[in-house]
Image (cartoon, rainbow, N blue to C red):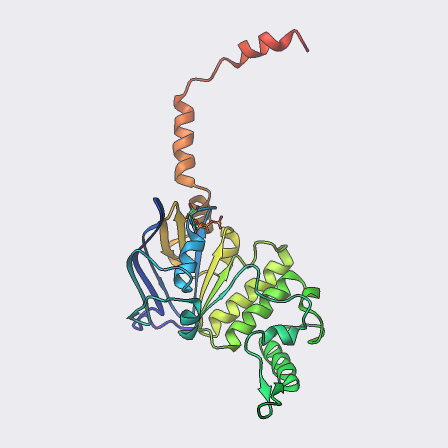
Length: 279
Ligand SMILES: Nc1ncnc2c1ncn2[C@@H]1O[C@H](COP(=O)(O)OP(=O)(O)OP(=O)(O)O)[C@@H](O)[C@H]1O
């Protein structure tokens, strides 16, 4: 999809800061998320990825900076408020109930009912049919709409959760490490649906540790390190090697290599000589 750069970004963070006591979880983070693009957020453990998505999705407030949705400054008091603005998050645990059917999970928390009060009841037929149609429309093949969601593969469960968010009106889709626990084939399935969501015009935020997965679908890349944005660049300014270098702490590694060259090699031979007679 062609991206209209004149439109304000759907989400815009400017100089965001967040502290937990004296821990600076985020400092001076600025990032724009556009519709019809996949924005990848990468970073090591503890880099601040979860804190950032929790701010975007209304779970955490922020201490400094500004957060705008479609150009309007916001401070969400709950995830419900973010959801009302079309910002949906698919967390790693997916919030699915494994023993319930695919269609039931598709409607979890938004069940359709029919009939007048007090004999209102679940509209099972419509939910089954619509869930089936919606999944098929997205090209998602689930063997049986009545099967428990827990019997689907990890990749299929992810795409059911993604399809659900899109069906219920997400404009921005935040995916929290959706490929982290998956093998190659299942990761491929999920990455395909990330691209499909982008092509449908959503703004997708893809959190991952994996630069290879990010580079397969990403339009913009942001790397967090110790709460600060170490890199924020569009795809055209970056290669996979650059991204991998940043992710693996490339600059730190270069400095380490330099240090190693400066330090004189320890006398390992002497240590060997001392212990040598025992062997
Ligand atoms: N509720 C909290 N209370 C105190 N410190 C926190 C809290 N949440 C996060 N932190 C700290 O903020 C920093 C960033 O953590 P965050 O969970 O955002 O990182 P992350 O990049 O998501 O890591 P991971 O990949 O391990 O999930 C860490 O130092 C973490 O210990």
